[in-house]
Length: 127
Image 1 (cartoon, one colour):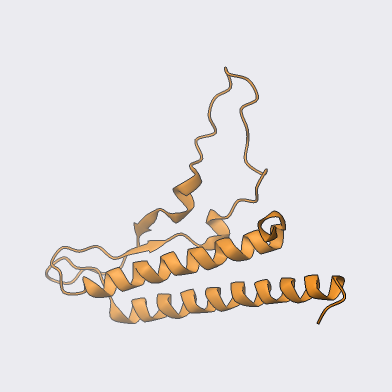
Image 2: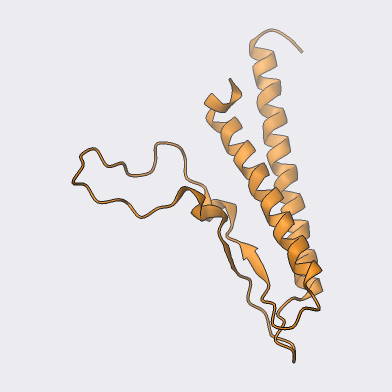
């Protein structure tokens, strides 16, 4: 039922994005000493989120596909960074910043979700 409410769907997707970003940070930290490893990160949620129904649709068989991929928003991109002498681009300081950003994003999604539930309870006459 809650997946039909746009703000709840967005909060859920933001939470999933934060979890995927946290996994990316953990993978980078685990490979901090691996020679040649390139640090990876996810695109920002604002760049990867598309509201349902906002994407172009092919209404006829001869229409070209829009080229947008549903999972493209979670595609890992190179995080950049200065390579060390062994070619590794992981910086623990940068990973700490990314981890804090993922936590902030998750906290925001949780706050939005809780506010939405509170609003629904109020509309039903419950506390």
